[in-house]
View (cartoon, helix red, strand yellow):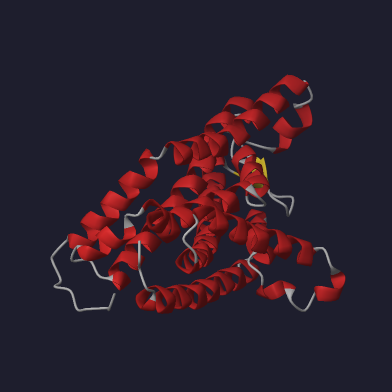
Length: 274
């Protein structure tokens, strides 16, 4: 199928984005994934509350500590897995279900359809990350309260200041997960099996973590997304350290640019037969 010019219709792109987000949130598998993401901070809160050994933590922590810890934990596996599943559905899922060809028959255009899928992944990354932050915050306040908290530098900050830092951490991690999703979007243009995309994306993530643990590959580590996942912890210093977070966002932007361009090049020239 050739790439032809399509008429530009006002608001058509945003209607497609809205439809993509609605479809994404209506899938039972995605709903279950959101429940799992939200369950982690709740389980952590219950474990801390029932342990009976919260005295020291309450004296140095407030309700924002729990969602911060949950974001750190879930950034290693659960969040990348969620993005891998969404990316698998983006193009490969449509091809596997036989709906991709019909989508392209409508006046959408391949580049615009790819942009819609990217927008859906972007929303998914932000929705999943901030869901963890919000659920964790509610559970954290129930366990630790809303008093002052200690930074990594040993200084005290108010609950309001902690909220701002939590929001920055969630924003940073959401952008990093968007980069993971963009990589998955490229893989989704290569195959017609969504499971293959999910597995391929997670293989990259796992190999990246293994590279992080191999000193002989230290030269490669700064170019990996996983190397920067936890750099949002620098926001907890006083004053916050921005240099490593900015470098991490630069690496994420590079990954999105390269894999996004590769996805466009592949998808706009791909023979759609199903």
